[in-house]
Image 1 (tube, helix red, strand yellow):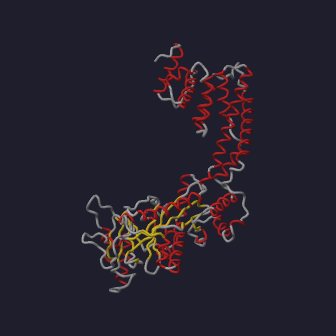
Image 2: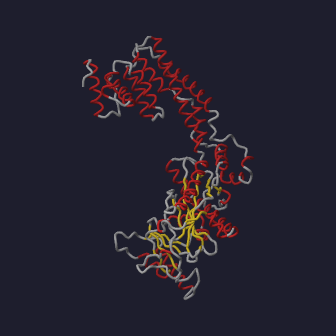
Image 3: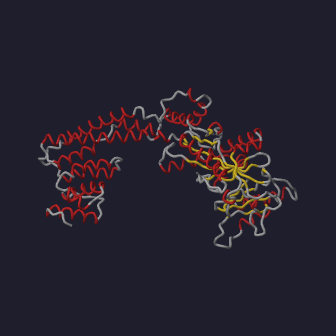
Length: 544
């Protein structure tokens, strides 16, 4: 997500929401080095407008923090506003020193607990963009600095940020950790509720601001809405006025559970495990791929029926075993579930119709666990955000209970009808394969100009499977091999190839090469091994 990079978060918010909203979510920021001159102009304007004044904001001596692209709280530096532009533009002397990528107003009046500064980590799951769906989990972690906070001592003698000013977990390993319930007990329900409502609102605005970039990324990948999902970690710092300031959006939030205190480690585990468990339910992982499995089973059944029909037809026509196997391979390659059934499975797994998409959303809302939907807080009135009609329709629907939505059955609910669907697909595919055999000539018709050699039949089946990326290619090739291995080639192949799938692959390739058919994917080493098989067969000897 484009909000995850240090320099991109403020820029994305400012671009989509405007400066007034952006600087109410994140502290006033400048991307470096692109906005270095703007940073200098801002500092100069403050000096000119408020010479010698004091106060938490608009003060030439207020602190600003410089950040590099490093993670884990590394590469930070605190400087007064009147020198921040000079420091940001200074050349870094040592190769190990990373350039600054962001200058940001420092929140110098943080809310303290027993004299310590803290930040909170919350998680947001984004499940689709048309309509945009985002959910904030009720779990979270309160991460404390291991040192007390002193507003007067913000820099060490070496010029580094004083430890009491950093709440990053990597810089405070094995420090105090709370869950959000403990924070609510400390703050009181009213104060916590005021703060949490702002966290919800800011989280919704952040995801909305990223919508344009989410759409662009999916278009580049040729991925539809709902084909991907993302879990992000949002880090907030609460100030003395109970305002949550977003400091970072982490695209790969840590799910590691580690702490020297066993009780704290258990607390971290409960918060993260509970969130992940709800994420799996929200995404419908248990049932999400049932249509896919049903489609694969229907395809496999259709191919098996086509193979059986072809072998039976060849036997009735008096063809030998190898010819029957080649005929069954050709029939199986042509056998597929009907187009209607395929479309049905695809719509169940990845809905595209308005009704299907809203049914997917209804399933998410019904199975969200402790994930709180952020959709009612999305700023649909902002023309700078590329909303779709479905976003407005979802807002209308969410004003009513999900149970009252007039929608088709859940898109995950393919399991109940999958058996009928598989049978239908197998029968239709077998019928289609039969029609194809009639149009091409039956497997027993070995005479005439249109007759196919054994290698050509194998090529039609095998190369077609290799190049089409058939999902069931492995089991199909093994089924073909079970027929072919009844021929005189079996002992020779068992002597040279051991893996069953390798046997089946190379067996088909051998038949093709023997009849002069090109094999596009065979290496020189395999060609030598196949030639060895042919020599063994020709000599009638099984010795190496």
